Image (cartoon, rainbow, N blue to C red; front, side, top):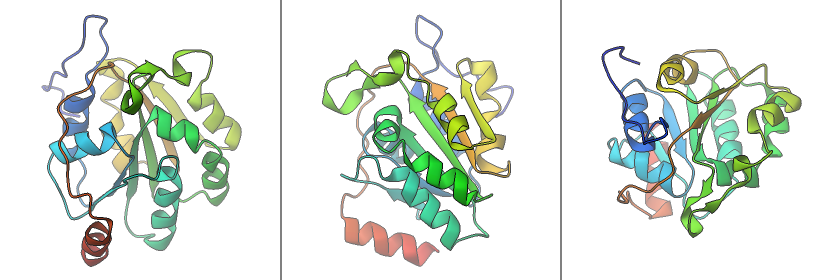
Length: 198
């Protein structure tokens, strides 16, 4: 991440999600990006729609496994999953399968605002005793870490887009919702577009 870029934070020093995602997308190169439903999709779309984006609509808990399938099918391409804590917790068992398959071209970023943003901002599981990074390590991930400060998050572009995987990152971000930026919700169109881009 550019050392001259300052990411905005909330009153408690937590990085705001949308500017973080925009900065990360500036470093994506030709990476294939798979987004979890809700805020992760809105944030990636807000950073600029791209034929190499696959937006997941209505498939909560399936984003990481879709990333695994894509990484296996496209071993010469970098596959990056960007999703929220609720989606990742619903599909937490996928981490064992991903660690076992060990694709070196896959990275997962969980934008963890510790809230269930799509259903009313209720406190999420990661706001309490649940630690997704420890779960990933227990599943067998060798590269798994939590990032809570702006300085720490400067490591994310390299980890997501360059470091041999599988990589699992949790970015602790500020709660709150930005305006929705809705890409197409037409699943057939998104699938065709993504296949054509490949």
